[in-house]
Image (cartoon, rainbow, N blue to C red; front, side):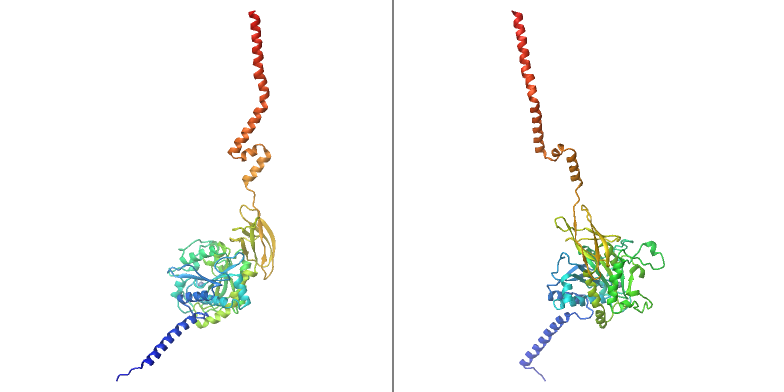
Length: 485
Ligand SMILES: [Zn+2]
């Protein structure tokens, strides 16, 4: 028996299929935003960033800082008012996540943070101010190759390294050990980025325990031979302790200092923070490189015991870290000193050194002469130095929770040649103008002086040379005529 649907029913069926398909597409698009606390693969990660930049074009920009070993783009979303360029006096901050491919919580937190900043811009006064006044760069995945080979699980190292088998947090040039392994494209991309942009502050998001780790991560080899742990502090240890504590104490449990991770149940971190070398030294870490090679102060956030938790745990992670991530960004506006360095004509001076007395770390001014120097509250003597300029010095007070402003004007030193000329002019005022004239005027001056010299001698010479021979000749003729007579 043959059954046939009437034409009207076919049309209805096709329409239903079409509607289902279209609604599916819409649903898929709606799924992208708002960002959900799920694990986004590399394609979905890029789609989220693209969707955010499409929805909030005035405060976002999507750019790639380079490619991974396998050629995947390393995407950064920039969030700020007037994105795309550094504005004089606007501080820059970066968050980098998923450096170890199997430590994935930070990757999802940065997507949620990007959405939070964008969707609350213009609605929430605090977020609006933060986006207006700060240039925020978020790199959700520094190691997309490693992410692809990782899987859900709290421990293990599968996916930790890049596709070339290198641990990227051991791959930066190290102040003590140099470059111990081949520089990877991901590392090179980060190095280019941090030397190009004037970052003030940064955090590197990891997982595996719950603590904030701050420089130095490495220490000189003679100290490494010791079996005991060594706290190897940077010249700005007080600042790093302060900013690390700000994060850990804003987090609901990190400051307790007792993560109780299954593989290190007894491990304790007072206040939820640790110096890197005191925990365990590493060579080639990213935070040490930031500190000793650039103006940027970076810390490392270990967000929890589980490196790759099931997606249902991502919401609690976000709630625990959201306020700490925001407060950490705000540090660039309420910690230390900032200002500009100009020359006498008010032009910005790039590369001037900001030197704090009794503190070895120097920061340098950026293109617009602007600088930021993180400092704990106190009184400081600041000296600004630049070659060919005289130093400028000021005493500045840094108050708690408020940034101090200090502008400097540098006066050019006189060049050595100029000083020599001035000295020569004093010693020999006649000779000096001759030296400074060009050939033509020098010739004119000489000619004029020669004429003067000649004209001054000419009257005496004419009397003796013209009248003398005439008188003598006349006398001789007179004597000869008398004798002939
Ligand atoms: Zn890690």
